[in-house]
Structure formats: structure tokens, C-alpha cells
Length: 95
Image (tube, rainbow, N blue to C red; front, side, top):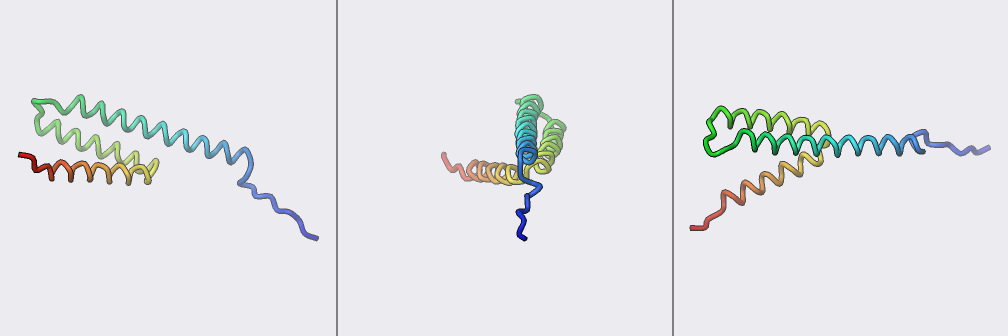
């Protein structure tokens, strides 16, 4: 006799788990971006010293590593966007 097998991963429990994961990823993404902007506003000013620049780089690296652990796809696209922005800034040949 043939029996129907029920996938244990399907159902409302799996849907709630997916919702929770997406909610946590979105929350962590917003927190990391907000902290990075706050770190930039606090440390990078007109009279910035090398110490504050190094502190910003270390803090940004730490926040980006958290983002990579949470969602590597968003991290990859963010790093690609930063690379494109830096490349366009370097290639600005206006006189």
C-alpha cells in the first residue's frame, strides 16, 4: 500500500522560522548600517587624526564582519557597491 509522506519541514512552524530569520537579518542589517553611519559622523570630521581614521577602519571592519555572518549575500553586494563607488571617485577626471 502506498502512503503519503509528510515533509516535517513544511507547515506553520517552518513559516514562522523563516519569518524569524528574515526579521533578525533585517534588524541586524539596520543596526549595522546605523552604527556605521554613527561611527562615521562621530570619528570623521575636518580635523581628524590618524588615530580616529584607524579607529573608524577597525570599527567598520568589525561591523562588516557581523554583517557577513548574518547575511553573506547582502555583504557581497555592499562590498561590490563600495568598490564601484571608490572606483568612480578615483576616475573622476574633472578639472
